[in-house]
Length: 257
Image (cartoon, one colour):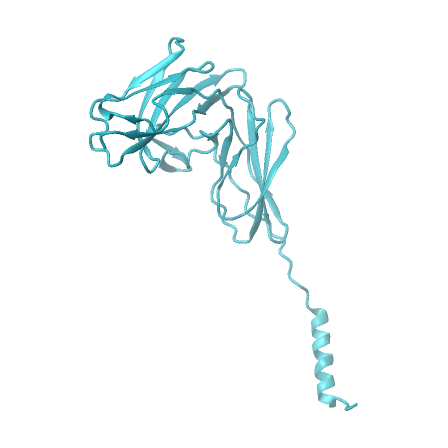
C-alpha cells in the first residue's frame, strides 16, 4: 500500500483537531407568542377599531365567531411572523370542563384561522381557545385565550334554495329558534360580500319573522344570484357573555337578472 505524504497526514490531523472544537449551532429561540383575535363584532357592524387600526368587519376578520355550516366555531389569530414554523396545536376548554384539551395539530401553511368542526359542541356553553406554535427545532410559544358561545341557529323557511324569484317582490321568512334579542338578515352578493342587511330588535316573541326587500334593492345588481342568511344575538347573563349564531345559507336566483 502506498503511504500518504507527511504533509497530507498533517493536514488531515489539523482538520480533525479543528472539527473537534466546533459545535453544531442549535436554535433555542422560541417563536413569537401568537395573538388570538377576540370576537370583534359581526358582519353588518361596519367599521371597528382593533390594534389601533380601523377595519371593516366581514366573515374573515372578526375573530372568533359562529359559522353558517353547523354549530361550529371559527378562530383566528394575528399573522405569525416566524419563518421556521412547523405546526400549530389547537386547544379548547369550556366553562363545564375547565381542563384544556388538544383538539387538533395542523401543519403550518400561512393560514391564520381554524374551524373547529367537532360534532359535540353545545349552545349556551362558553368555549375558550388558544394555540401553540412549534418551530422546526421544537421550540414553542403559547397564545392568549379567546372565548365565545353559541345560540340556536334560526330556521330559514322562504325563499327556498335556488328558487327563481322576482327581485321586485322578494320577502325573506324564517322561524325563530330559542330565545333571541336581535336578528340580522344578511344578503351577500355573488362574491359572498355583504350587499345589504336589516336588523330586528326582538321586543316580543312571535314564532315567525319576515322582511320584505326594499323596492329597487336589486335594480343595479350585476348578477343573477345572491346568498342570504339570518344571524341571531343575545346576552347570556349567567355566562356573562354575548352569544350568537349564523343560520345555514341559501343561494337564491333572481328571475329578472
